[in-house]
Length: 222
Image (cartoon, rainbow, N blue to C red; front, side, top):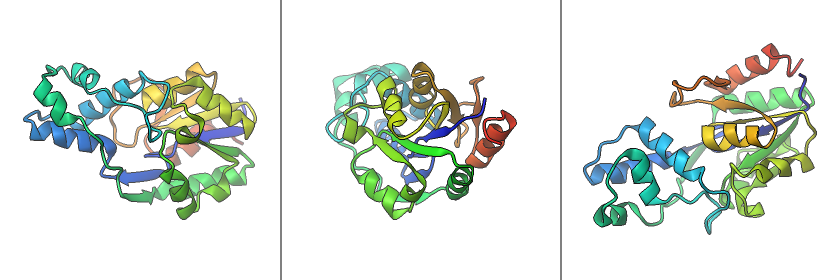
């Protein structure tokens, strides 16, 4: 099946943020005496985020601390919940992944419509401009603008305002990006940059260069 459009996540797909969002929670857990692995923390947070279809006040998926502790198998004492709760300052350091520009230019050269579908604060618009991503894309669907978050199927449906089917969505969180896109009727490809999904038997790649190979091997792009 030849595709006409690619929907792309932004955070940890095109743009890296440091520290990583789950690392902040992991640090608080460790300060409380719970040494949970990066993979386990990331997967637990992802599952909790996927329970929500609407954003918090800044435009992101809410993370309920009690649900998170349940996913981690940790008793949610009041003391621990208080220690983990509170606002988390957005990561200040960000960069364009080395393979991102090449991937965007590849899609652009093939006349593929590119639409960004991202759960993000309003700052993401400035980052997209600063890193010169916007010139490649037809549109940006950001949760802070539309009042929805992935995995809500309507997030993906909004992308059709700027693109044409058939389309595939590529992103780094299984519950939000892969399952969210599938439930919305799109093809999906999981980007597993950190090897956190080694146990999942789904269509996945470890970087965007592999994504190019995948799209050509599947005859989605010729």
